Image (cartoon, rainbow over all chains, first blue to last red; front, side, top):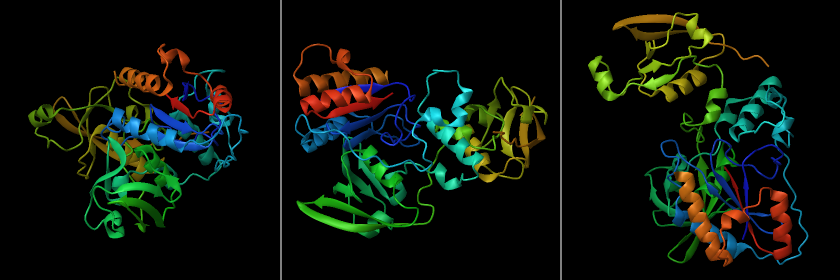
Length: 332
Length: 51
């Protein structure tokens, strides 16, 4: 196998390398003519490493090696699909010019610059946020050590209704061959927002096929772990370390409610409303929000608009106070 | 730590797959084009990592 590692997105052809750009590690298997044989990597919200297992990698790698049948000397060019916005390299996005010349471009910046570009063209839609859905969105879970094997299927889920069961081994989702969690996520990423998608799997030596329904909003997941989340607007303009359960208890707060200590830097929108470093942010007046700081930042981004005024509640010196924050608008 | 473990594992796997005893980390190419040229000569598949 020929090995390569890329540590900078500058110069990378986005038509060939479409992957979840919020990941800190993502792998591709290619045939010697450039055809993608498979992917490896991927993650869910709580666990960055859950699917980065050696047995999982071995299984995916073996599948790619078995499926590579190209002899030496075969001409190399696989037709590439154009990107949705026709931009082929990250450095071609106008927003990338904010970086110093030749500065390293991080993977997540592809999403940042792409969304800034879409906003500048008034083509940005919320659906563009929901990238690389999880198999759990359709009701099934995967074995981290053999990532085409289903470990459980939720009752009444789209997967259950299609007839999938624990121990089934996926072969294809639509036309995408499945050997890893990353393959599954990519197949779901390119699936339509509604309708259905065909699954093919093996059970007890027999091949099965069925359409899995795609219900409304099926793509939505917890995006609080994503670096690119911070680029969405409007910014909540508050952030910091979550209080521990013990700290919440000592303040008479529920263990699950949002409560975090504002960090050293207070963004202008919050500072001008009176928020200071060290204030304990309790969320939005009138709303019971059970979430952590990151999820709170997502909540504001998804439920409010730039320019909207939101009243935050906070504790300072043991006293509960309020601050009316005008959520900021980005300029391009 | 996670990255170190992954590199160690990948090194092991690649030694097993490629049959070479030298440190495979020295054989990680740094561009797809270079990897493609080598793969085209040898017929071998490519494993490319973004990190």
